[in-house]
Image (cartoon, rainbow, N blue to C red):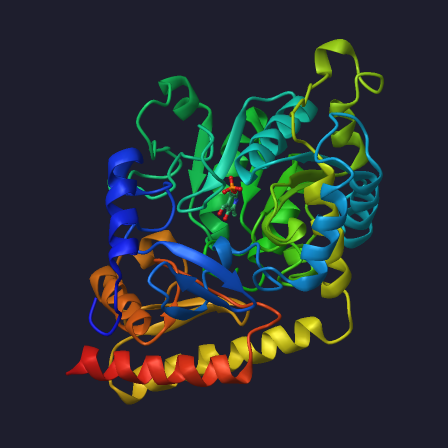
Length: 428
Ligand SMILES: Cc1ncc(COP(=O)(O)O)c(C=O)c1O
């Protein structure tokens, strides 16, 4: 990549990764860079190049890397034990904090990944409603469990509500238990729910799907139709919890689901996620609260581990301070609107979409409202844009700018300069 020096050490590590890791990666971001260190809103690669980081570990580092308060809380707990497989003080405190924050949460069950959280949320909905099928939205991302992988990034588009597997190795039977609807299309979604309501155990949605905000009335309409048929509505808030607002997307958009999954920011970069929801549904995790056939065991070696719990509590304490969200949204707005302006001035067809704390650009003239509209955008141009801004020290994933509470005015300036450089190259 032009403009970035790579040392022999980093090249060696890239080669070693190719030898020992499938595809030369951890399965996440591309293997062309090896990260050595993160501090605040910046990361450094193994060649010593410094970047303003908008990947933020794919979201958890909402306070930036190695935040001193989080690091201190973790260091303190390291001396007192890292996991017990039994109740611990910090996990109980964190459960209370989550229940106070998230409007739908009467009770919480912890796990370690978002993939597990959505799996359990769907299972709880089925257990409660005593029906097998789950409706999800095309392009909605709920992690890597078999159910979530349906119609996650289909290229072979099928008529709704047919599901398309997004991975090899998933039993056909799973495909048959999933129905798929178009995000932001209340009419089609309503028609599918009306036709299949008696088979549906639940509806799962990212209230903000990837980068697409819900149209006014969409989540409200989904809430109304699911309430009418008494179908549990699951918000996957792995990304949006404690990010869009302290009470997540359910507070931000003013629509309260029956259950939610949460993670990422909630544990400040440590492995902890959760399912939270209404008492009647969460009762299925309690052997004494339901008949034995209705009980759902949920056992996990590291569930609610105290290291992640103290990291979560320290993170939430800072997020709760007055002004944190205003600042994050304010900086995000500057970057987001600046990007749109720079691309408009360069006459590059582009739509910057999302909310101020989480957004990205699609290179297209068309409105982005659902998964199918994203397919019309020029993805090669986005890859080029991502490489060009990286040359100028701005790091992001293949899609999404995540904002943190510690990005600075200086970061914004550097980012704007990178955008101008990229726009010049792309239009030249
Ligand atoms: C909305 C959403 N749900 C679930 C997941 C899965 O979380 P994890 O990677 O912790 O399994 C993700 C991960 O990015 C996500 O964005």
